[in-house]
Length: 97
Image 1 (cartoon, rainbow, N blue to C red):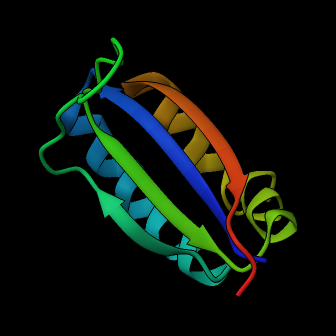
Image 2 (spheres, helix red, strand yellow; image 1 turned 180 degrees about the horizontal axis):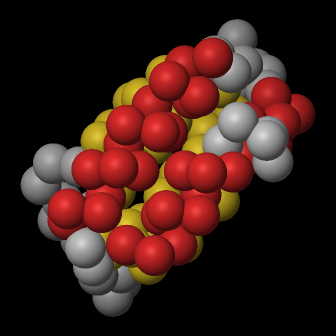
């Protein structure tokens, strides 16, 4: 069953965030991740969720998404992101295909 990493992100250092992108993208791809949403306009239709930037990445399974997030390869990108952004990140299972 597919799983989706959903990130609500506020970039506090755009220059530093470019370093995160360079480090993260190859690792996400190596773990089979595929971007579904990366930025773009958002509009809240209900509730008071104030998004700055939304990112959604699809993985083949919840286990694979967690392997990526906890991997040694992703650790350098994760450390950079913590210095240049504020994030809320979840992983959720999708519907069976």
